[in-house]
Length: 159
Length: 288
Image (cartoon, rainbow over all chains, first blue to last red; front, top):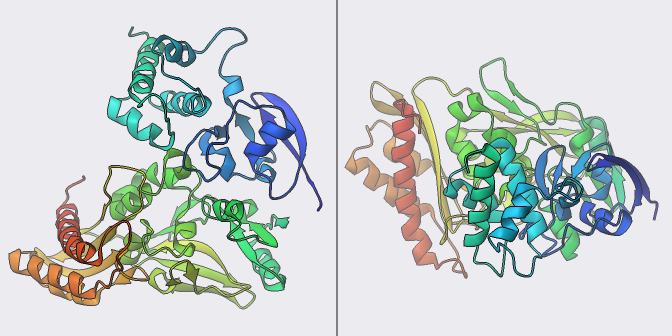
């Protein structure tokens, strides 16, 4: 099986990797590039644990082929913190205890950051609908929603 | 599996025509990659259409309709204000497909070619009178959307044929469309029943209408009897009753875990009536 050579940008860094044509972007991120923050929950686009941005668009990386990433700008959970300094969303998730096992958290952080980038002042309903594709088995969602709303307020300078 | 990135639809059609094994076209991938992973479909040739110029474009046609590229995602459709103003029923159907993440990739043509009778974007397209352009070695031809599905999970495309665009007709004045579906929750589920109505008004009466029903037959239905029930009326109670009766008569649903045949038949009458009322309000200028 011929492997495909892919060059892309991940969290601002140029990367290159070889991928089998059947391999998902998620597998490439985790197994080829060692970026294990993005998780595989279902592998069928239902759970959102593998959420990343591709050229600024929120997608499930399990439903993107590694080969499709050629020339694209990929953003993952690893790029959210600024060095040792956590992003407001990450701090608010800790503050509000918006995670227990943490498996869904990377995908939710990436999805929530994408929401706030285009809608800095979402209603609770808008947050719930936007995150409907991110499943969490631990929290019952309320703490996640509160953390996102609080982070949004802080980022707007309203808190 | 060979991964192809043709630069034109002619090239894509040629690859498909020459392929010996299982072929799939890749646009959004939200069905193809799931099938690939589940082992349901393992293509020998996967033809990625996103390197073809124009596949991400939404353009006005010369007659005032719309031409939508095959890789335009649901999110991109929802952001296009002029298209949403013309065909809110088409867009609200597509907008119901999957999560935010799925909307970032999923396409109208993918939803159509997947062949699900419950595909949320298809009744709106059928009611609108949308066509798709099929490109092959013999050239291109336009085919009505309702003629593409062949049954659950199947479509009529032959090897060597590829859909190269979606064509929406001109909206014209005094027209409106709407799509409604029933699911037992508020988001992220497959339609138990879907109904789309598209109509135009002349002198306060319905001049033209198309009614399409989803998830109540092996394919999405275009129901002429339901359209005839409201044409020439102002959608009064008698017309709504006739519409409801015609829609229920056309429905031949199955019973499954999502609902019984009796329930689907009941609900399709309710939804088609409500969709007609929303389409009527929109035709009269209601922007919602």
